[in-house]
Image 1 (cartoon, one colour):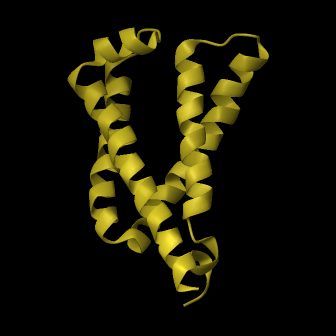
Image 2 (cartoon, one colour):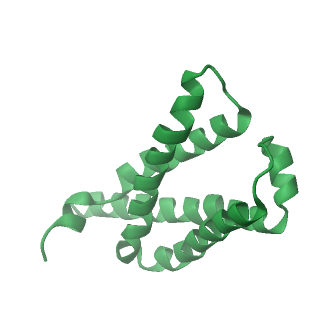
Length: 134
């Protein structure tokens, strides 16, 4: 049983690290060089206020993940937030675009990255113990 708990703790820490590097790094890139990020991913011009607001949210997630690496169980809501909003984005944004037969690089890339978070969080989050009554 102890081995299973250590594996789960390893997954949690891996997802926080992925949040720190992936979300935090991308958020920082959006804030520091939005034009280059748009050019690399080939996505259409965005409202700078909206784009930078999203960059701030991503960077904040990455910064919270630093503390989560020290206290993994206390920061599970950070992973739950990702587990909720990423599938919603895929369902509401990506799927309709794909059903139209369009596959823009930025939508495919974001969808692929989001799927890594969804699968990883489903594995990492100890749902039974998190939602059990104290």
